[in-house]
Image 1 (tube, rainbow, N blue to C red):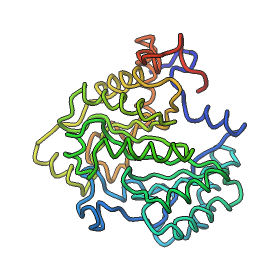
Image 2: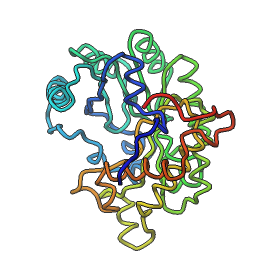
Image 3: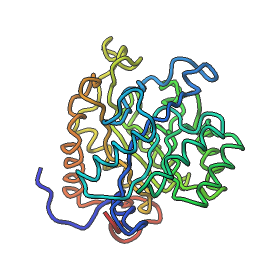
Length: 318
């Protein structure tokens, strides 16, 4: 749909990065060869019900690529497409704070040392920190831009159990407290539309995110990836994914309840078409984004409108 000209109705990542760095900055997706405690046996072996590690591999990644090769390929692509020369090294495979601190630090610092890299982003789990890793992250955060993004997924313990996450919301709150106590910038990843979760439970996740005081949130629709327990459940007819219209409504409801200062890292999630079992509308990222923006306009609403201490208007920045 056509989007009328308007002030920003949510606090977008691009605007935040321009405010922070004074120029365009783009994430470069990287594979560090990480594993996950929910897969390697220390916590579990099956992984989360929605997770296939292949679904989060960067577009330009090929097996066997060194970290330097990934950075060279990824930054060259962004330079061509976006004419940008500043990058955030974004480790996104499995649990990127899970491992020996010295091994993790060597990877992080190699990425930070690459020309044009101005900061580091790490995707991880709330239960995958120990004091030596926290100490190391604190040291890096004092020297460079660091954003640690935690897989929160839901504010409902019942949903987390059905996801086979292996942690509860208390672990989420504790992890954010530990990171914030060390001055480390954080983000939260959440999923809307998990089977069996009510609308009220989904919106309770906004309350949890607000309580943590995290700086950013990645909101994404449930998309069923092939070769996962969730795909088997779908094949058995045990649930039906949200329609695009219902996801649009839920995402806007969520934004209305969210702290207006929280940066929106994403508003939709997708996997490559060949790995997507359902819903097929999730593959068209721009159509999903345009639908959410159009719904914000239709309702004449904005991020934080229903937040308890909201400001009088939409958030600044795009």
